[in-house]
Length: 210
Image 1 (tube, rainbow, N blue to C red):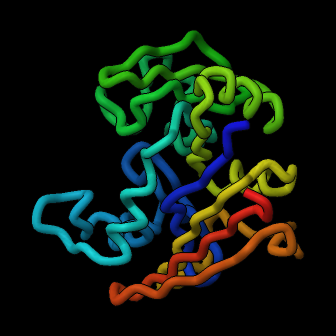
Image 2 (image 1 turned 90 degrees about the horizontal axis):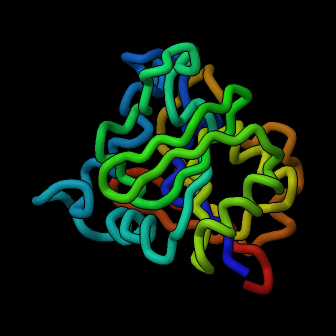
């Protein structure tokens, strides 16, 4: 069976994966770009960027992925469902290049974008969404794209096979946290930590037996 994988999911030292006050102009709220500056500085992101451990992790994002699941908050700002013309926060050629299943209580018709991305809108449980995405992935793995609430729900349901979380040395103080309600979740995984000269720490949680 294909795996459910999380890659490059950045959190602050106090566990927030997105800041407070998300809007059309501030996709990550008051956090801005601070959670992802380590990634933007890599060679994979822009020519002339850094190599090393950060770049090695960024390059694991795409290989073997056949579909993605994302939460409504990653797709757009609060209230996007009220705009019938809204096509996501990722531009006309989104960086996913696969079927993407968006979990929302406001389904709408699918949207075909440039570059192989097609957005599908589901009002479904994590298990139902993962089953649907696996069918679309054609034997490849399914990436769980976030945000933090969605990933937390999949972890709580025992559906995450591999989680790469990046601890960024900032304190946000408010926003949406990843780990709430997940006490003891690490018991189901082999956990490894890799420090980077950029100041971030890469944590990988790999389910035993895979």
